Image (cartoon, rainbow, N blue to C red; front, side, top):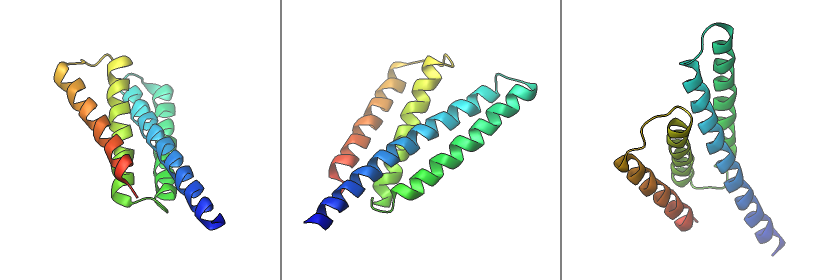
Length: 120
């Protein structure tokens, strides 16, 4: 019983870590986008942010898959990154928010929720 509770807590913790890894993926995409808008020393700071966030994202993903199915974890990680990056693109970088773009992002969100729901 105690071991079962520990395993459940570990599994929950790894889902939280996976979500944080996905958020770092969004952050590294943001940093990469900022490199297009800057020059000189400021641009190198954004490159450094990109390297830091991407490394952190991958390390957290590696840690999270210890108790999560790799296929589901990877799909959730990329889903968080994709949705977050599109939202950053629309809200920060003023990319177009067309109907079809938002429609497919919505289907991606539903798919990620579905994968989480059926993961063992």
